[in-house]
Image 1: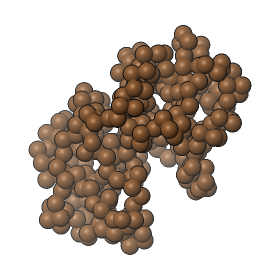
Image 2: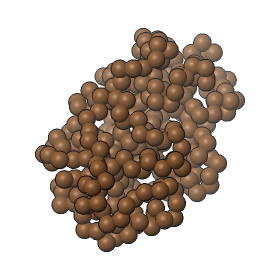
Image 3: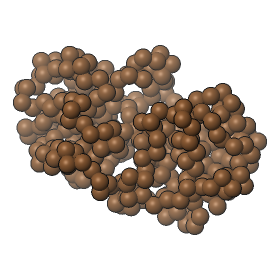
Image 4: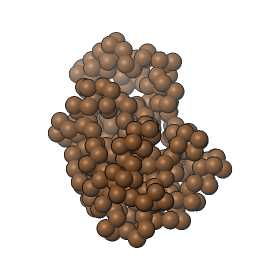
Length: 299
């Protein structure tokens, strides 16, 4: 048996699910489970609760008994607490069955097959390619709202470009900002100009957790756009954060920020001729990561 830990928000969960499918499909591991215990504590914000079950995903959750057979410690309680992190650290150090991904560089999975527990983010496009067809079939949802379906139909019918602008945690927390960096106004100006040179009558659809900032700092005047070529996703347009992924996916092109949520919206697009623009450096501090696929444009 092998167990893949699921943690973080939806974008992270989807990478971890994809790694679990990779173990099953490419490496023929017959009994692979997901550890969903990260979401069992009331201290975790609702927005981070696992959303994998709303899609056509295929997985079994590891039971407490199965986790006891593999892990030295019970990983329970608030994941942000010192005690939780201590138990994870001890498992990673003392448990020969436990693999802890200490950075996000791509790894040769064949070298990891002797482990039974996989604690990581697995954020490389290379893990996705062998199971891409299955992931595109499974990362779909049947119970989307009429509002969401309406916007999906609208954006798929135009030369749409989704523009992801992430604020909040990256900007308010200096430690996070020093690691992840910040996609600034100049990045968006260059990315929009790149799209306008290559697309006929593009419509730029802005997705952000801080739309007032977007309206002020990425206005039509700043970006050199006509007002009728810009669409802002306001609160009243949004059913929930989960469904926004599918609205992003319905667009035909993308300008992404360094967000796994943006990544999946762009990666799952069905337009074969899509143009995806991404930040040249995903992490500001140069920690290794192999997330940006070949063919995406780095600016």
